Image (cartoon, rainbow, N blue to C red; front, side, top):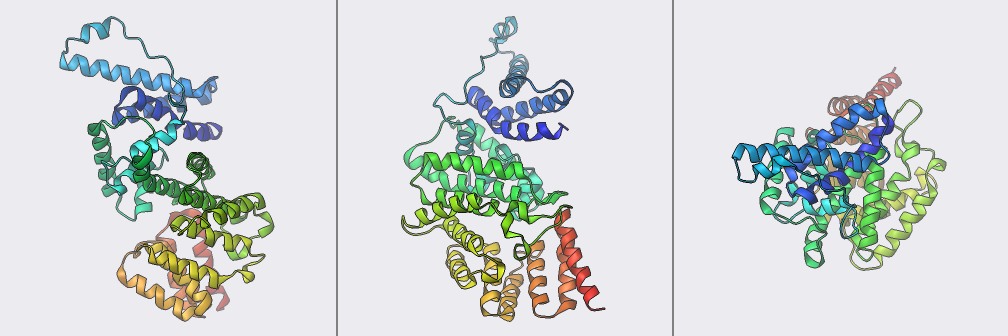
Length: 413
């Protein structure tokens, strides 16, 4: 593995290098394999020898050589007439700029992966893998599906992209609009994985969150009048503003109502509020704008006790009507509990639990445990905290949930 200072650099460069290789060779699956080999070489050499002066060009050249080797091998195997000319002297193409059109390769790659030849779910999964650098397991967790199912979906998506012959360029007009929803969802999922890692020893993966914000800023600069793009950027900024306050010195989780709000980044909050207020004035609000508005209500409260829960409930009610997202339904139940009482909130959680949609997700158990604790039902709360801990692959979350259960047991004497 590369040293920590190289890990962030490699993650940032990965989609840019992949974009350059895809643009040059027009074979997505083969390009991804070549880039992976280039990054393995970098992970081996750079910690020992130091990073090259131009890391992106170095990676692109190594990946291009891998592609060339593969092309030669394929041509030799097929015994094409061009084998002789390829063997007598193949010259690697000179390194190209990020894009012939001046666009960032990463953004173009995202729109390519979100091609209409793919279903929305497959496009999002492929983009998370190619651009976000998420593992298949992490993507499966985001989609609430088995890892094997997700692996098959990504493999089929690569095959579809290869067969479609989609050009490597930024789509325009209606074509861009048709793909935009998937691109926004990809950015949203990348940020979420960065803000709260689904597995491992770290609560947050700041590099992922920062990259998601960078790409969303880039997209917003290109589409300044699109309210949902602005809403998504606002949501990221308003959420990321709390990052420093979310964990303690030993990586322990600090819940929102216990956070030191003086640690929140007020400049990010101000920027996010300005973005969402401007976006909401443009017309009917979409899901990202509503989530950003909810985040703004939390961020603008001077203390947890001053949070405007009726407004949050109203926003979640509108958001809930827009789709059938179980996480939105769960968050709506929390808001119901804060406004109409914990009993009503628990009733809503029970309704969601009965559907079985979040049966294996730790968050349903964690929310119910918290509400049961508020209701004074400590025995059941302990059971649910333990059940939640058993269902998360995140060590900080597991430690927090087990600590909550232990605290309740201790309080009962």
